[in-house]
Image 1: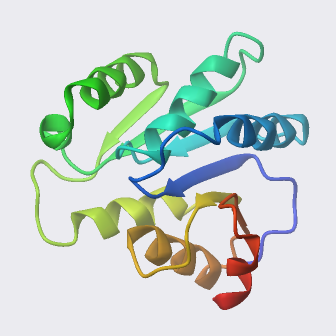
Image 2: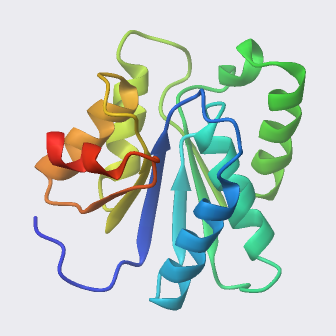
Length: 164
């Protein structure tokens, strides 16, 4: 499926090591997408980029009330392994989201890939924070491209887009 229309549904994917130093870049990207008509934003709720992107969306909801935050979470106890700070942010986001879907009732091998597929399926664009290395983020970027879904990589080294 090739996406040629204005993106309305955006999925985020990125590394857990994302340290929030580029949140202004994420905000600029999201504001641009909202100006182009994007209204639904999806996050997988892992530490790092997923949580940061969800917080950006929640921050914009005060200015643009018709945007939605959808969460696709691997399983209900997913946040138990997080640091106290990330778990607090996770719970705040969870309580303010417009839609929450759990992929499974509990962990199983492959649940993260299934979550990543669910994030991308039906999305018009994927916004990534991907360093080019094999990872869950790399898998999600490859899956999006296989579906014909455009990917915007916000990672500093933009030439990585050419390596796929």
